[in-house]
Length: 84
Image (cartoon, rainbow, N blue to C red; front, side, top):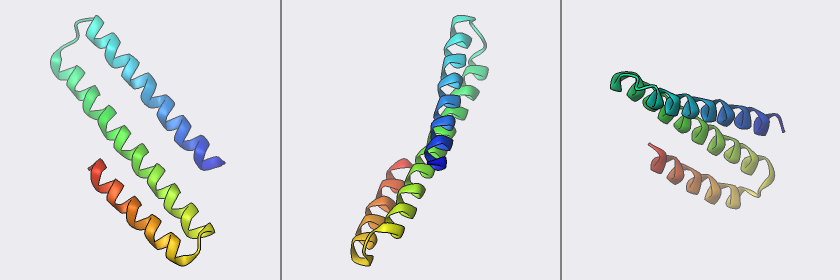
């Protein structure tokens, strides 16, 4: 699916960002620079998690009977609460 590819691409960029942050540590870059990168990575993880849950909700609404979809969406909303 295109959505899966988009999410996979997002996670691969995040992987590169984490690798870059490790290199910053190895290069003894200033703490503020490293922290900025870590905060950006955390934000990217949150966006990826939100995208994943959004895709899951869309799939459930499209293929599940109404009652099952409602229960699944409710669980997805609870999962989003854990992300924040």
